[in-house]
Length: 274
Image (cartoon, rainbow, N blue to C red):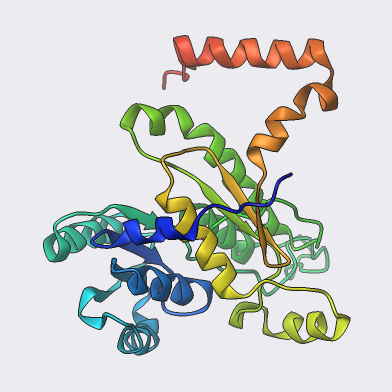
């Protein structure tokens, strides 16, 4: 896999664009807002009402604070998402880029078999399923997951499927749908792990590294890409995966899969009638 060395000068094309960043009040989201705004983009922080003070603090720190706006939104409520887009268009006239960055992580293991009710029956992991729901609707991707954090990893792998499944529609609409998959990046969500990581001597990303990968991906006339950010380097992984399919699966299986894809693209994938 080749290191992603795209020209940073392309970020100058962000001037005058309008960007929504969900979960933009802190962490990677806030750094992404700062980067877009520094290149002249209108930036909208879309986050929960309880983060308004943090979001407004971020806005005051921007190079162009008058080109930024905080809009309270819960991404699980469709009417609020529609209102977010309407308000953005009302204020800035258009929307060019949406960074789906909002995400959460479970506080209790999805695989906790000791979590039982009064009858000794296993409880449903409502928190875990909420993590999957939030992250599939609102967050950036992660390509590998071996930590055992079930709901969080499940949601991130689901995003890889969503990225691939959305490509035909994206191309028909003339839009780009891409993903950024950050490896460990110290943020408030991972405060406890960050200290252990630092003591291990392993190299970690900075929120700025991830923000740069997001911004660069948004400036390219491409779709279906996934940029992994690991150890402060950005690497595109979907093209490499596709190039290695025959080596991985064998020629016969690869040709069958590729022929099936062409069939689905040409004729659609019929959904069951309800």
